[in-house]
Image (cartoon, rainbow, N blue to C red; front, side, top):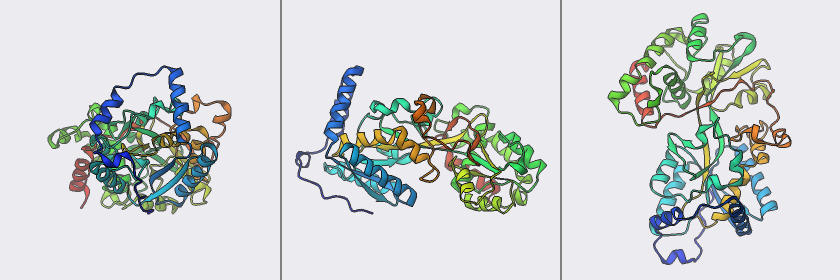
Length: 409
C-alpha cells in the first residue's frame, strides 16, 4: 500500500479539530437556490484545480486498479486534479487511520474513501465524515434513487448525503437456458424446480457471503412482516420472525445436491459445478458476472441470468470524504466525475470492470444511454427486478448461527 503522505504545515496542526463545531457549521448553512447552487459548484470546481486527491480504495483487483488509473488520467486532463490511488488491503485500515488523525487534530492523509456497510456506519456515528455533500453533486440528479433505494440506504443506515453512490451489487441467479427453460422467479418457484430436478440445485453454506445472502433472500420472501428487516432484532424476536424461513429451508434442503446434507463452501465452487453440468443454476452478487463468464468462454452462450420478480437483496458501494480531508473540493469533483454517464458506462463495461451502474438510464440523453451497450449480450440479466435493501446488520449473526445449528453438521 502506498504510504500515507507526510502532513504539511497548516493551521489545523496548531489546534484541536472540533468535529461538533464543524457539524454545527454545516447545519447552519442556508439552503441554496439553483442559481446559487450552480455558482457554488463553479467555485468548488475552480478551487479543485491543482489539488491532489488521495483516494483510499481496496486494491485487490487488477481491473479495478486499471479503472482508477483511467479515471486519474481523465481528472488530470479535464480538471487539473491529481488522483493518487492509496491501495488498501482492507478499508477498515483507512477508517482506523482517519480516526487517529481526527482524534489528534491532524489534517488528513485521505481525501476520498471507497466505503460501505459497517465501515460507513462507524464513520458516520463517530462523525468522521465531511458533508452532507453527495446530493449537491450535479450528477446526483441522474441516480436511480427510486428503483435502487440502496443509493440512499447503506445496510439499513441512511446515508444522509455523507457518501456518493458509485456502483451496485444485487443477488442474481444464472444457468443454462437450454436446460432450464423458464427460470424460477421466486423462492417458491425455486422449490418447485428443486423438486422436479432433485440434486441439481444448491447454494454455498453460510457464513460464506453468497450463502448468507441466499438465506437472507429466502427470509425476505417468506417472513410475514418484512418491515422488521431494516430494524435491529433480538434473539427472541428473531426466532419468531424466522420461523417461516426455516420451514421453507426444511422443505427445500432434501431436494438439493446431496440432499442438503452437504453444501459447497463458496460461490466459486457452485459456479464450477454449474460449468461442469452438475448443477442447473448458480448465484452471484454481480449482475454482470454471468455475461462476463460467457464472454470468457466459461459458460455457454445459452446462459441466462435473472432476479426474482419481487426483487432481490442488494446494496450500493459509495465514495465518502473524511472530515479532515485537505482536498475537499477536488474530492467532490472526483465523486461527481465518477457519477457521470461516461465514467459509469466505462465501469459497467464487461471488458473493463463490469460493475453495475447506479444511474437511471431513463434520465439520460439518447447519446449517453447508448454508452451502456451490451444489455442483450448472452448472460445479461433478462428478468431484472428492484433492489431489496440489506436487512439490519443485527440479523446476520443470528441467521448464520441458527443455520449452522440446524444444518451445519
